[in-house]
Amino acid sequence: MKKKILMVYPRCPKTFWNYETLLPVLGKKAMFPPLGLLTIAALLPQNYDVKLVDMNVAPLAVKDLDEADLVFISAMGIQQESFVEVVTMCLERNKTMVAGGPIIWSAHEMGILNIDKIHHLVIGEAETILPEFIRDYENGTTRRVYTATDRPDLVHSPRPRYDLLNLDDYAMVPVQFSRGCPFQCEFCDIIEMNGRKVRTKTQEQFIEELEVIYRQGYKGEIFIVDDNFIGNISKTKMLIRGILKWQQERNFPFYFITQVSVNVAHDDEMLNLMSDAAFGMVFVGIESPEESTLISIHKQQNVREKLIDSVKKIQAKRIIVMGGFIIGFDTDTDKTFDAQINFLQEAGIPIAMVGLLAAMMNTQLYRRLKKENRLVGNGWHSYNNIDLYLNFRPVMPEKQLIEGYKRVIDEIYSPKKWFQRCLTMLEHYPKDPPPRTVQMFKDDATLRHKIICITRDLLFFIKQVFSFYGLEYIKFMFRARKVNPANALAGIAFAGTFPHYYSIAQQIVKAGYTCIDDLDTKKLETEPRLQAV
Image (cartoon, rainbow, N blue to C red; front, side, top):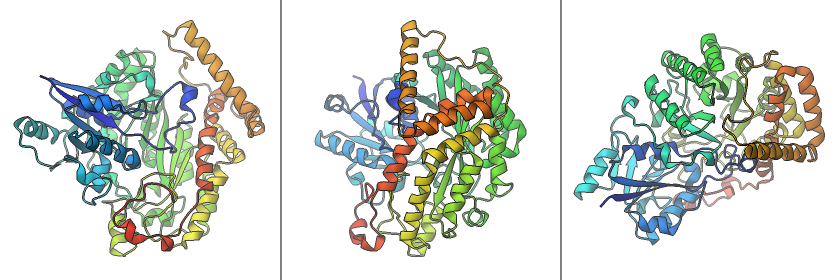
């Protein structure tokens, strides 16, 4: 009899990146599926029946648990509340659990989040370690902890099981080309988890995955989830040349989004290739516009050239820059808050994820602050970029830091400043029309579907015009047509994402805060802070 494996991906809370206010407009249920579990599913023997429950799409049913022989759970730290709920449900049904992912990598030794009650823990990358667990499971010799002793060559990583999904449920589909990043930013846990040596799939592997997704009938946004897509520049260029050829042969069915370091702006060939292959958006870790801060956190790659010039150079290729920014570094002063605001406005970066610094476990920063006796409680953090608390004692007075952070969020996501950044971004764009025609509808869309899309978009447009920021939106539409007529419509559509970011910003601004000295730090040594105070 076949073994039945239930894979569960816990719910993500409201954040900058889950777009819960926009998903209904797009007709989607979640942003993207769990690529890690899809890859693990591909590692399992063919005689195992696998079912995936993404709790961001549908709730976890008791029936699914009852029918499973094993329950696999993978999560990030940000999913901790839902993760605990899933573990509790499994315990109540007496189900054997196998858990992995970043949340286990970070917290398995801390005795929190019910991890001590999970039967089997997989720590590290699954390609080399999961087969060992399966052998032990079938032989009845399993142990509790399986730790990867090496980092696998991605050439041997299997094609994810996209067939387990209804791709229409998601706003974008994730793929992976590489793991690791060559840099050594002090606060980053990626280089600790995945290493500084960049490991890649082959061009053939990656394009085969695109083909599988395409054959399932999907057309739209593809999120390349790499820690740093340009970590290995020569291999990335080779890959993009292959992607471009594949896109041209299929009339560009995909639009790519990925994460890169700012040095992408120093390579004209790379930018041209990305633009030609339909890379339309990149997330860049800028962190701070202040050079002294960037040097202190070992982010030297951001000081080679003026950051503002690097951003403009990327935008000049019609690539939207999403920026990651952090407040709370030891070098931050009362001037930092205005510096962040002014940089964002001048650079024309509408989507700016500005967060409070978190000392993430297994990072250089965490080890330094622990040595300096500056961690709070057990040092655990929710990893939620909108939670309003610190897990360490900052150099800047705590109240000043929190109030300054709130002011930055409040200002940059005010309607006036948001639409001004969108306009500035269009000013940095080229003034000629895009080199390829962007189809409004899929070639195989039915008339009924087209009518639904037109009606939905029209209602969304009307809702914005008659909202509290409607005047700013209307002014932006007219100014966009004047500043950059050829790209105005794309800019107007992008600006329409404002309601989501505004709602997140207001949640942060209105949140209460309890100073570290007023917390029960003894309690925090054994219990994680699951949400903002």
